Amino acid sequence: MPARAYDPPVPPLPLPPGRTVLVPGRGEFFFRDSGGAGTPVLLIHGWMFPSDLNWLHAYAPLAQSGYRVLAMDLRGHGRG
Image (cartoon, rainbow, N blue to C red; front, side):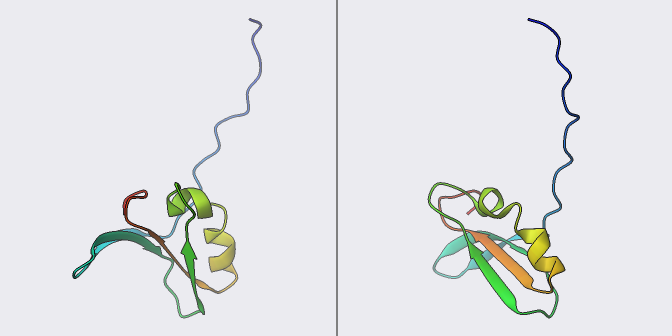
């Protein structure tokens, strides 16, 4: 197989900080919160994918537009 030139690896996209929270009677959930005082936007992922895969390219543009971006992994997905 001939050698090919490859693009250098792309650095990971910056994501808002994430943490796990305990919701009494519901269990633990992982969510990300960009913070800020902007209008909150809650991102809910689709079936079979965690929020980071669904919304990877949406976090930064929304936060840079002034929104407070919140995203969570529902139970059974990602870190939910």
